[in-house]
Length: 323
Image 1 (cartoon, rainbow, N blue to C red):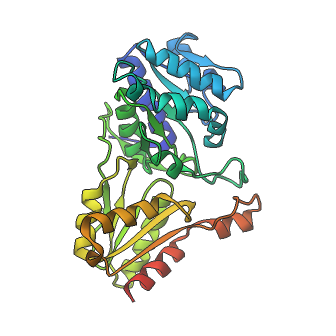
Image 2 (image 1 turned 45 degrees about the vertical axis):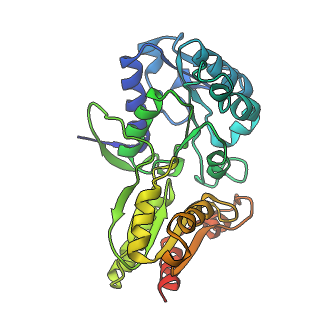
């Protein structure tokens, strides 16, 4: 095992797969310089300009070129630089990448990985801080990956690069500097398998991405008060580990879903609804969602702090759930 930051774990995963498979290449703004976050540092020197391609500032072009290369047998890593920029390439993503395998009866293979660093980070304001993963969980044809640790980022990125389905990879930029242990070589982590972070029977708490360490801190505070909960990190929200969540809810009878994204129509609503659909309303004594208010992310540090989910908010939500 090697201790590295989350962003370095992602770099090493992409490096490993580019060395393993000559069909893997990366394209996006500034990737030849190492990427905005250093996630492709030294790639140009090793792989050359044919496999590490800095593109013009045109997200629709980047997305379209990536798809075209996949359709002729390549495996592109499409770097969107910041999640919010994907809005400029929605036609290529939503109407082409997500649908083309189905529309051609499996004859076309859009094996692309779209990397989209997302979420709040250093007061980046409303157009550079969004968490819209629920949009894409709603989109048939794509896999949605939302890791929270260096180990999961590395393993899930390896799995994504090897996948024949298009994968939308939400890099949690607020956690890029957080250290963790990864294996060498990096082994793929299958999609749709949750990670149990803490175990208890007072309530089930479900979360993913940058919210995971925040919620984990809240769970530690609850444990100090004698309240132990089951904490599950979904790791991917499509597919998501319905079996693990439902099994936990059957044990605890109470469910809290926490995400950094806006609470209204967030993926937490899907988790609660699915638990009711499968386990029946009798399985739940209480359920609650905790997310951001329905406002743009403020630039002001003080106001951004008010929008964020905090450990204290998690503690308050769980205590209200079990009261």
